[in-house]
Length: 234
Picture: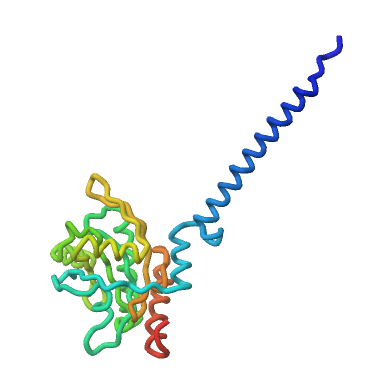
């Protein structure tokens, strides 16, 4: 006996099913590629943080005036007051975002800032670059807590300051401006991204550098301060 031969209608149905399946796969792949392209700024970068860094480097962002407490209990403007010390030229600032109860990522940031402080002092850059740690835990990080953190970290007042916004609204505005994502957890901890944010002497966010490149952040801050002093503000 000869093997059964599929009828033309059955062969046609099989081809149609295969075509539909292939089309579905192609559409899914195309949709995925489009989503990746959108999320990575046209494939130029692979993460949201990297896209943010690239955009800030191309177009600096003005940092809003937000009232904060520093570790001395002094009410001040988070950046504009920190940039200027009476009798001294304005300084560029490297900013990070922390909370004093942190037991994970902030420890890494603290080590990076201690390294940056040593380099600033070793290179004699105290009059050009300043370090600023901003706590987003406005409910718990009082000036007293900030002072204990500064003492624990060995922060020199002329180089490294700690502040926390006076209100949740001010905190949210700063987090949005700097592109910091913060999510509270039930155990009193916070999940957040981290970077080194370089602010020039006019109070504009001009660079976002990964925390594993403190030398790059210091170089960018020094360049911003030097350029400002000689030819205007970048």
